[in-house]
Image (cartoon, rainbow, N blue to C red; front, top):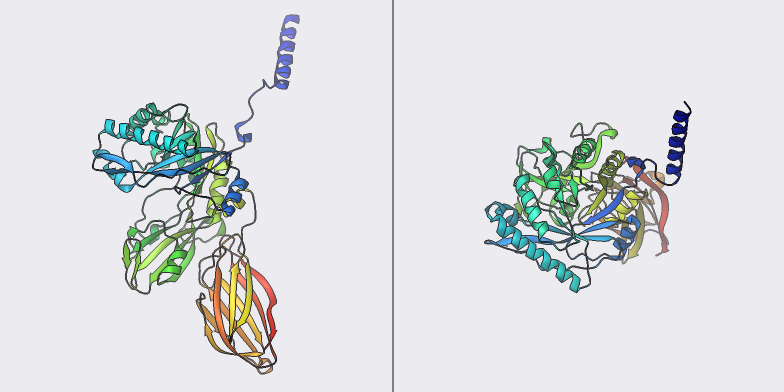
Length: 496
C-alpha cells in the first residue's frame, strides 16, 4: 500500500513540476492567436502612404505579393508581362504569387508534363534571381493556378516543380474548396509546405434569381474541418470581390464582365440604377437583417451604346452586379476565427485595389468604426452657388435610390437655375407665405464612395444685402440598414 501511495505521490509531483517548467499539456489550439497575412493581387505594386499605414496597422506575418502570370506561346512558356519585383516597406515574410493567364490554363492539357515542369522551374528560378538583383528576397513561391485537371495530375506537377526549386524556399498553392467535396486530396497537399484555402467560387449563376453571395459563411466551419484531415498547415482566404453579369431580356446570365465595380460603371458609362437590394443567404432578397450576406445585388441599365471591357452594351440592356461591403469580409473572418483547428494557421486578407481598400480592411480587423460621414460646403462663384458634398468617413454609402440626401436652406437669394451635376435628382419645395424669402432644395444621389465629392451648381440672384446658406444631410449606411444624419449647420454667409 505504501509503495502505491509513493508512486501516486511521485506522479503528482512530476506533473506539477512539469507544468511549472512548461512540460505540461500543450496550450489549447483555440487559444493560439491566428496569423494575419495580406494577399496583394497587383503585380509591380507600390504602396501609397495611406496603404503603407494600413499595412502596418494590420501587421501581417506574411505578405503574398503577385509576381506575374504565366502565359504560353505555342508550346513555350513565358511571362505575360515584364516582371518588376519591388520591395515592401514592412519586415513581413514575403511570398511571391505566380498566376496564369486564361490561355495558359486552357492549353495546359495539351502541354507535355515534363516540358511544362522544366519550363516552369526555369522561369521561377529566373524570377527569383531577378528579384535578388534589385534587393528583393522572398521566402517562398505560391502557385495560384485555376487548374482544371485532376488532383493526381497537379500532385505530380507540384512534386516535380518542388524538386527544381532551390532550398530553403517554400512551395505553397491555392486550393479551392471544391476539391474537398469528395475525399480531401491529402497526397497533393503533402507536396506543399502549406496551402491557402479559397472559399470564393468562380461558378457563374444561371440567372438573376440564382445569384448568391461570393462566400456562404455558414459553410466555412465545415470546410475548415474537412481540410483539417489533410494534415498540412493552411490559411483560409478572406476575400470579397464584386462581379457583374450581362443579362438577357428574361434575366438569364449571358456572360460575366470581369472585375468591374458597379460604381465605376455608373461614373464612366451611360448606365442608370434600376434597383438594388441586400443579398441574403437563405433567400436572395434578404428579409431579416441576420440573414444579410454583406453583399448587394445591383441592377443597372444602359441608356446609350457603351463599350464595357470587351463588350458593347446596347440601349436597354441590363447588368446584374454583386456589390460587397465590409460586412461580407467581417462575417468571413468571424467564421474563420470561430472554428478551431490544429492545422489552420490563420487567414489571408485579399487586396486587389478594386473592392475594399486597405484602410477599410485595417480598420475592420482592428475593430475600428466603419461608416460614411458627409461634410457639406458651399461657395459663391460669379452668380452661382457651388455645392460640394464629401464623404470623409471610412465607408461608402449604400448604392440605392436616394441613398444620399442633402437639404439646403437659402436666405437672401432667388434661384434661377439648378445644375444637378453628380446628383440624380433635385426637389424644390414650395415656399409658404411667411417663408417667401427662403428657398429650400433637396439633392439626392444613389451613392457616394469613400473620399468622393459630389458637386452641383445653383444659379442665384440677390434678394437682399447678403446671402446665408444652411445645410443638413442624411446618408444610408450599407451594412447596418440605418440612415446617418448630420444636423443643419450654416455653410455660407457673405454680403453681396
